[in-house]
Amino acid sequence: MATPTHDMNELKRRMQGAIQVLKQELGGLRTGRASASLLEPIQVEAYGTHMPLNQVATVSVPEPRLISVQVWDKTMVHAVEKAIHASNLGLTPSTDGQVVRLRIPELNEDRRKDLVKVAHKYAEAAKVAVRHVRRDGLDVLKKLEKDHKISEDDGKRSSEQVQKATDDIIVEIDKLLAAKEKEILTV
Image (tube, rainbow, N blue to C red; front, top):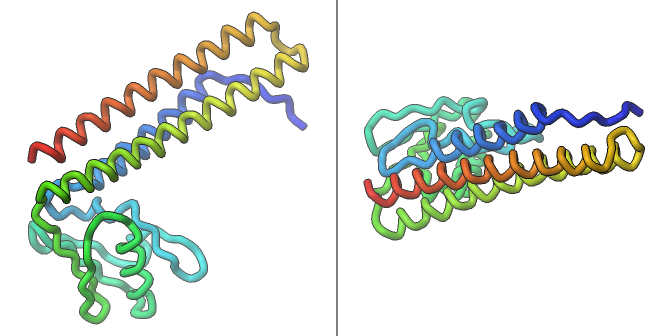
């Protein structure tokens, strides 16, 4: 088995990956306007696997408050509807043949609060992902220390670097969440 190595840059890159996913998810939370990116995070159970919605349908925005989903395979229409319901975006699909239409509701106070809750859920998922990366990094350091590949002092110093990187990313996640929350509540 290969000896594990401690690579701080790799840990930071993986933590930045969580930030990128969060930015994409928050970008999908639209505030009262139709946008094709709103449906990007949706996964459809298709052909025995989970696939992004854009791999089973064409998503378009014919009007400012309407998203149209043209499903390519008519046997997949029900699976697309089910995935949209399960997405917690608060959209109700209306189906006409192979076209699923989604009206974007006006943002009332309850809808805004729901969107804020979804944003918090995305942020918490990003924090969990970052903490997993931190745990992986600390596990590698403990193993290296146990195998006498690094000194106890180096292990402690490196552990502190991992924690600092984690704290920095968590602060960035909180800033992204606060900005999105403000955008949702003040449209």
